[in-house]
Length: 276
Image: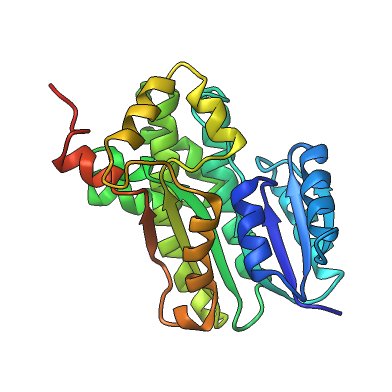
């Protein structure tokens, strides 16, 4: 038996974190596309890691439970890395809400039931959650605490109240942040911790889709005019995850870390500020 890491989302960021934290563990990789999970599994196994790939539907509680059950066959689940999601250029509003918002909420909830004492989780959110105007305290509490199966019935998440896929994505990521806060209380009862990372433009295949999509110029302008003057790398996200998931982060839980090269700062107080 080994300690087990559950990794959802077979992409560059998830793999970077798994490589940083997953040595000596059994890593169970779940992705909607079986071929993606298999590809990341192969790369990692050939680098000396011990991984197994699974197809999973992140919008299905049953599928998420099956992934966790697969992990439990190998030992206690001590780490969760949630890097699954779809971007505004990849999916319609309903899919973004079902995967990025509902799926994350279900995963956090199901993982809280099985996470081992001393366990840690990190969920990958986005700077987008920091861009939209502040919600009311009541709306924030609804996103944080509404029973998972009722989440998508909230007025704020009804399709007629959502402008476009970017707005849906922003709401999903705001919900991720609030959900992590609320779940951290439940995880704490198990002696475990969970946090989120809201990253900016990170060069990955998904980001390259965005660069070449309808909002490509918007994204290129964003990293050109942020203080860092460049996009980030998956390994820089892994640097933050390493802090949060190691003993050095033992006093950090229920928190969200913004790592975006200063793009959000520039959006509010610099050259990226929208001109009305």
